[in-house]
Image 1 (cartoon, rainbow, N blue to C red):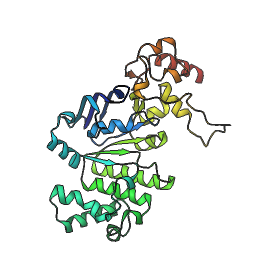
Image 2: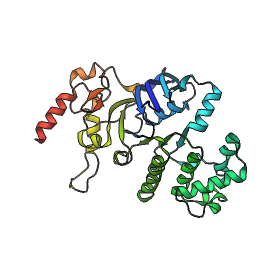
Image 3: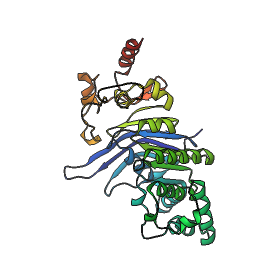
Length: 329
């Protein structure tokens, strides 16, 4: 099956007073039709910038290289008309903070039907009927009344459902969900994620789910890609990542999670601080924080390569895996 989304060698640089700064460094990533892919990592690792590259919504002056293919079409080569159709009809964006992306001076109904009326030529009455139906589909009660309300009149969780409804009305084949549950409490998080996952399955949409919550990614996605310093450092099935994570950074993230089964004086933490791609040296970007690093790790950047049914960017992965296996035997 051909991928719905395929990124190859995607690199993004932005201008600065000190010269060009690299934010993404050779991203290789693919998504099959109907698949849910998690993209995880600490803040600043490049998760959101990767999705900006997918939609060509990059900072002013940014330069992008490599290839971004959607259903075989090269996104980076699209003219203005093709790019507009791609954004309006093929890709849906669910943002982290809906209040920052929904006009507070317009009613929810006006926000939902605008794209249908403007881009699809749907009559306003029919557009409002469709919007009410989709609001009900995402679990909003009394949708006719909600259409007449303003954003400040509903809760954050409900407004996030409105954001999801706006995406579904466009009937996209690809959803990019950029930390859609960060501002919500745990109960509402679960409801929003359940809605997204159910509708993705029912409609056969592909989804990239960006989050810093590794457990959430493992629960929602079939595969997970781990990012560090603008690079993909590990890709594995969700079950495989939980049971057989191999990269030292992934192991650190997994080890830092709280557990209800074990008591500890304090949570483990990955030592040091995360860095951006432009701060990385010639070698492995994670080497300054890695418990397994050797002098050679500072000299040569390892490639992303196949290992144990996944992809890992680590030159010592076989040794680390063997040592961990022996320690747990």
